[in-house]
Length: 192
Image 1 (tube, rainbow, N blue to C red):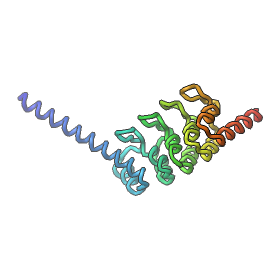
Image 2 (image 1 turned 180 degrees about the horizontal axis):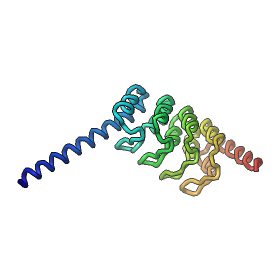
Image 3 (image 1 turned 180 degrees about the vertical axis):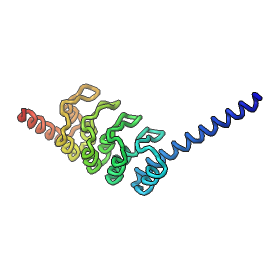
């Protein structure tokens, strides 16, 4: 009797582990479809197979929205948001939002789409304490910097080392960024 019970218990755990592995595989497949811009695959996985739109992959714990932003896939971003994707979801490795991910590459259109969908341009809930503005500065991306400033980026935020965004821009040796921040700070003071 005990042997049968333990055999049955082992079988139940095996089935449960298999189901969990299969579910995680589907999540990873969905995220790869987002990375590669395969909207038809995404639609099938979300609408027919019921994969959670906010699922994260096993490695870096990125969501489909993170990788769509990283790869500048605006059509995928718009679709995922229409299906309930959280535009401020954080990854599990760096605590980055999709807006941070857009800044890691040349993701201007992705950042624009995320902001249109109410992404927080001042999100600093990450391990390195950098808002998306800081990622733009680190990459000397003046186009993204201008977009973030235009959409209310807080220029008084500090880095993990307590540097102001202006000081950080100087350390990144980006004279254009320094000028943009100074001009924006001046404009903000004049408004008050």
